[in-house]
Each structure stands twice: as C-alpha cells, then as structure tokens.
Amino acid sequence: MKSSLTSRGALILIVLAQFLGTSLWFAGNAVAPEISQILTRPGILATVTTAVQLGFILGTLVFAIFSIPDRFSPSDVFFFSSVLAASFNLLIVILPMSLAQVLTCRFMVGFFLAGIYPVGMKIAADYFQKGLGSALGYLVGALVLGTAFPHLLKGLDLNYSWKLVLWCTSGLALLGGFIVGFFVPDGPFRTVNSKFDFGLLPKLAKINALKSAASGYFGHMWEGYTFWAFVPMIIVLFKGNEVMDSSDSLLSFFVIAIGGISCALGGIFANRIGSKKVAQLALAGSGICCVSVVFAAGLPDWVWIGLLLLWGILVTADSPQFSTLVAQSVPPEYRGTALTLVNCIGFAISIVSIQFAQYLLNWLTIDQVLGLLFAGPLLGILFFRVYDRRKIIQITSQT
Image (cartoon, rainbow, N blue to C red):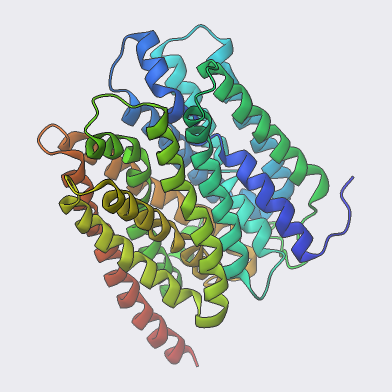
C-alpha cells in the first residue's frame, strides 16, 4: 500500500526504479551479437537499436497526444508500463526466434519505456518545486546506469547464456515497476489535467522557453545515443581487434556508466550556477570530444580511453538540465506532456543519427563518423541561445 513519503525518500525510490526499468533499453544491444549468429544475420546492431527507438518515439507520441502522464496517475502509468515492457523483453526468449519477432518485441519494449523514462521525470517534478535540476540529475543518472548495465553483465564473462541477460533485465524492470506502483504515491505538487485537448501541442509549440530548452536537448540527442550505440565498435577499432571480447564490454560499461555520475554532479552544480550554464557547458564539451576522437586512433591506450571516459561524462551531464528547463518552461498541469513530447522528438532525432552513422560506415571509419556528431551540439547551443533571447523578449512583452 502506498504511504506518505518525503520528497527525498520518493526520489531515492524513483531513482532506483528508473535504474531497474531502463536496464531494458540496451539489453538488445548487449545480446545482438549472439542473436545475429543464431539468425545468421550479421550487422543487426543498428537495426535492433532503431527498433527500440522507434517504439519509444511512437509510445511518447501516443502518451503526449492523449496527455496520459497528466490525465492519469503517473505512478500507475509507470507500473503498468514496466510490467508490459518487461513482458515483451521476455518474449524474445519464450517465442520461436526470428528477426521479425526480435524487432517487434524490442519495438514494444521501446513503446512502453515511454511510460518509464519521461513519466519517471514527471513524478520527480511533482515532488520538487525547488532543486529539480539536482533531482533529475540523479534520475537521468539512473537511466544511464540502466543503459550501461547489460554491458556489465557481458563484461563479467560469467559464461551464462545470452538469455540470462533478458531474464535479468526483465526481472529488474518488474521490480522497478512494483517499487513505484506500490510505494511512491503521486507527488504533492501534481496538478491534474483532466481534459483531453487536441490543441495542446500547438499551444506548447508557441512557448519560446520550451523551444529553447528543447533545442538544446535535440542537439544532445543527435550525439548521445549514437555515441552509446557505437561505443563497443570504436573500442574495438582503437584496440586494433577484429571482434569484441569481454574486456571491451567492460570498458563499454564504464564509458557509458560514468555518465551517471556526471548527471548527479551536474545536478549539484546546477543548484549553484543554474541548469542553463551546466547544460551549455556540458553540450559544448561533448562537441569538442566529437572532434577530438578523430585524432585519437594510434595514440597510447590511456589517451583514447581517457578521451572516451571524458566524452561519457560530458555527453550525459546536459540531459537532465535540459529536461529541467523543459519542465520549468510550462505550467505544472502540462509538465508530463511537455517532457514526453520533447523526448519523442529527441529520440526521433537519435534514430536519424544512428542510421546516418551506420550508412556512413560504408565509406568512413567509426571514429570519423562519430567525429561528425559535433553538428548536434553546435546547432543545439545555437538554437538554444536564439530561442532564449526570444523568451526574454516574450516575457518582457507580456509584462
């Protein structure tokens, strides 16, 4: 039975549940090599990643259009989404395997992740009027750790079946859903939007503060998930290997997981200097890493490993702060819809980026392809500042 919680207690439970639930996200990537061998279909990594992203995009679009996080209890939405996402993840193991079956199941995992990631941020926003940047820093940090977790399972080289990865991640997601569903009530600052309004999305599109925050987030999304998706590949390139081994998986885990720490630290700094500064500094820094990686091949191991770890730190630190700015840019009764909509567009951008990167690999090496990702941070910062100035003008004209 749900009990009354302090905001701190609620945040701890939400962060734990978010970590457990989002471990589903890259579970398919972790087992893609084994599935590729079973199906005798090489090179399915990008396709598996895209299936999840497409599902997430459709899920967030449906959730945003019908304002599900604002019209219904976000804790209940989180619970049911976790159960359904975990179930579809398990069907890959249970049903006869084919490429269509794998992609369909991963697509549905992505669809119901729309009720975990942005809805988790919505729940946190309902518990915090102040210090939201710090709270979302911990929350997105949990997403990053959840994303990295399947790589850790592979990197430990415990001689378990690839099926165990899917069983474990599904079990973790179910546990996360039960934590929120039964122990985290809706927050004290939740404002219910009981009306269904088809005109809501056009209204939100007129808010310059929202467009400013969203622009920065979109620049981050052009870079972030593509970097994560191809981390194992660039490690193999820099090490000079032909195939990936357990040590590569372990290093992939650290490169991705270290971003969880930077999300939390970025939230602490945001309480002192503001989310806007932290977000812009991190996005600019990760853009510099994009360019730097082109020159890292052939350098000593400690140099390129250090660069990848630094990139892992910076590539995530901006995300929770842009999400904070999104949540703060709209009235409370529209927070869930705004967060979900921005996530929807952001992940659509990530799909284009991942597929474009995969296409470019026909002519370029992976370090050269990742170097081109700098366009995302560059345009993100540019449009962030353009709409930020318009926001000030908009506020001035209304007063």
